[in-house]
Length: 380
Figure 1 (cartoon, rainbow, N blue to C red):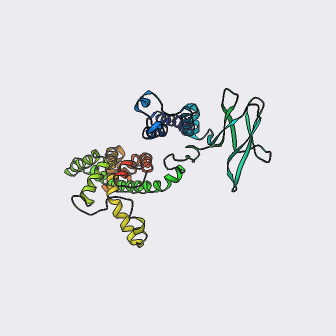
Figure 2 (tube, rainbow, N blue to C red; figure 1 turned 90 degrees about the horizontal axis):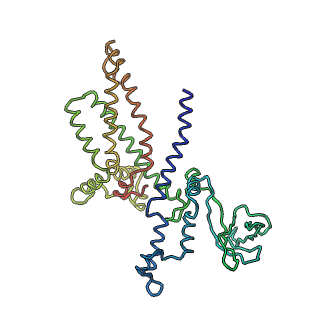
């Protein structure tokens, strides 16, 4: 048993490595990333600028309309100036990420330059960059000590000997550190953007999971105990029809039917709850009613697809255990059917249900993007 657990634990490392490499590769190769979008926006801005500054479609077809220096800066900003293996380690959080870049030049034969890098304690923060033997750069604070946060490196040199350099800071940020960096869209820390959305997705996910277990386990048990009956056949037809309908499509139909469109005005058109100005005026009881009122349709759309899988899994597991020898032995000893089913058969039948929780938790955390978009819920 100890060897088994040891093998399973050791298997975590190659599994993690393989899965993260696969995800990282897909992210790198997928078109339409932030770098491509920024380049396209700058190109379109140049085309609509008009006059001499405008860019013709011929220029667009002939190649990049952006200066090489601008492309270089964009690649550095988004991290594409590094080798792919280094970008992978940065993405994991085990290789330092370069942030707060400041470009500067070092004139020929000059061994030290002063550089303004920002503000510190309300005052202008200046540092000295010195050229060491061998051409490397070292950053010193004004008190003469080597800077613990700022680093510098030479990027290239001009024909007249002027060196092009960059000063930057290091930061460990990645999926293993919990620091996911800053969002290029919202210009805020990613965790700060995710925090309120995560609570919304988690609320719907946990509620939908709880209702799925609450409905599917008793339904699967009844189908197993009435195997082959009209109820078994009819319920199978219903749950498999529900399984074949995408949750987002069902959500759209529910909104049309019950959201005050062409039919009944029973539920709100969307949102996690009423607007803040209304929510703050409600009593605690009215807040519960309002929350339930907003969540009924999204929960139905979210959990309807899981009914078939969980119900059939519960039914088949119970049927398999009811056919085992130990169950026949229990009946032969004269035990009542309820005791045999609920005490002996159920104990082993719920194991497959319990083992599926890991998959369901992943779905709960990830949420359902399309359903949240249909109901205008600000989740993941």
